[in-house]
Length: 603
Image (cartoon, rainbow, N blue to C red; front, side):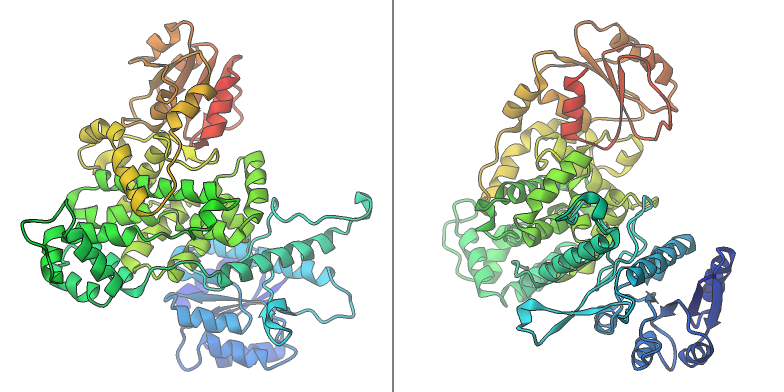
């Protein structure tokens, strides 16, 4: 029997587009332009799922939820809320009423929405079959929160729509959409595997993800104080002035004292000591105040010395390096926000690891075994997709929208692999991220790296100068790490030189890729790399492991394939089912550094 979907939206054009596609996919569709019409339709036929707009005249989507929650025969209907204005108060109220699935109208295609609906309906069906027939099943069962002493209840979200290769459908979720995880939290069994009930395992997995969500939201992590948030907003504005900055700094006595102390330090002090805040700000400038704010540690000091301390430290070092490089890449008109976007681009990772605690060690092992990047591993551990987890974290830290917006695009498009143009700031941020990894400021073996194209460098500021500066950025990054109280990092070059072995590399890249080149930097950390100007020269090289960066549609593809082994080809587009000649290995970028190292060691 075909599933019935109720679509409630007052905008006919939007409603028609959704209904037409649903009908083509075989759904029975009821449509309503208002809540009263929707309730009238439901009195005749209960739908299997309701797709409801939040903002409508007279009665809105929140009122619709209250009305159907008051009826026992309707309360079990799963609801997906749509909104063009993702206001937090709407989403929080909807979460209280049992909704765990939201989509932002500007962030999804109709086809992706249909996929979400199909997955939700399939999930509801599996949930029905996973419990006793005598028990009534609701879309969001309520369980007792053990931490509340038995008096408080917590909504247990059902698993609502996994992340596909196209990326997340919604870039905003207060009550986050949960995705079934194939790698994390696998249930254990006490008897033979043949007696294991897969449906029971699904319920156990959901409970574990829901527990992680509660832990995530209750975590008492260090957040930015209010004045710090305002300073970050001023820092991304081209019209910010020192008087505006002074007004904000005065509201925070600790920050005021740090500014005065810096103004009277050897680096800034003149003949006389500075006693007034306005004079101190003129001496140090807005950039120095930003450095003070951004050095606020976003990691518990105690956590840095715990079981996951090394990973937390490496992520924060990586964030500092990305901030410095992103600042170097950005043209002057975009520089105010470039440094800060680099600094905060890995906040979801920092926060997620602190929420997982020692449980991260198990997730990390499984991520290494499956080749997942760290952002995927952490998001999947909480049953979220990149954009949803990022929104949770950026909201908690109260990042201004001028920062949070581009960072969400980076999480969704660059990390979540959404097939959309990311925009100039997220694109530069992605380049800075890979350059930081290439210079050894990645984090652990999970960090990914890729070559950078000529096309994406069109908005860089003085790329040639950046090439010269790259080897000398370490000292600047180390100073920032000292301000943030981070333990001293290991020198990546000394470690890598042991891993790469004694045999050197011959390297060539296609002309569509440029310097600074992260792949070349990774290889250079071995100390034994010879770069060649043409593929023919690489082909004739003797006594080296050959590495080439070239795509299948390049005119040099066949020439490189004819080089013979040992040869590693790094490429960006898919090669489908192509089988390379003997002695030739293929890796698609971005590639984890440990995979690159392991592949080269086996050539």
